[in-house]
Image 1: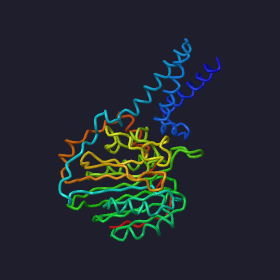
Image 2: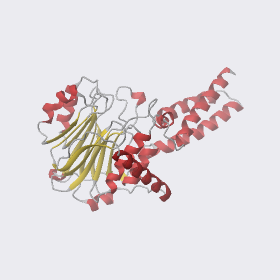
Image 3: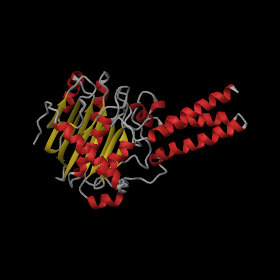
Length: 364
């Protein structure tokens, strides 16, 4: 009887953890339940096996309820299984001058393993580098590695939201921008690939859902950045620690509004956080690209002492028609939902225009 009661309580909690994220709310504790879907479905499976051992009608009811809850969780995770169709098929590498390598690392502000981060930068030798959580100590540590980059943007902070953006590509414009009312800077840049093809880069690191931090600011920042793809006919790529998993509501909306594709779909989770605890890992460091971008490779990097793994992508832009043949279109949002999101973006733009902040001058 005691075991039955324990399993009933566990089932109620696990079902609630499955159903609550379906709500349209920005409450931090609800949105936080989107993160550990793999962990939740694993607990559901263990509880299912325990109920199997009851051999009673109560056990059967528990198993049926848990089976339905597991199915719902798996529906969210399934697109990131290697058994699912890929959104971005790999393209042939082609000539070296047509390739662009991008690397994003959340270095973890208190991480002192500067040498590991420098080694990863040296190993991948990226054309575009985006570092997050960079304070004064990290700025000093990585400065030697930035000597080969003609363009470097720094927004150094001690609040876990500093950033450094560096590129050796030709820069049409680049600036640090604040896309939310929070103190979380982003990078907006227009660059040229080595063959002269122009494209846009967006680097994001919004706040996560934690006690006292609902996700309105994060969602507004991510949606506002999605519009950066809508405002141009140029190819667009976006990287960073989104502080939301690849299967979350806001990730799907970001992709639909901006017309982005996710190379994780059909390839596996490539979970980037928590790098130090395998049982807590989830895919929250993202790379997205518009359908006119060809993917050559997408990979998780080496452990660098941070709680995040580096994420890198190698891409090319010179053949958009081939890219569209290799890539699968993102399913559009219903018109009513898309209109609602675009209205929210406009409201966010109005709020941002009323906030006066010192800004990094654009590089032209």
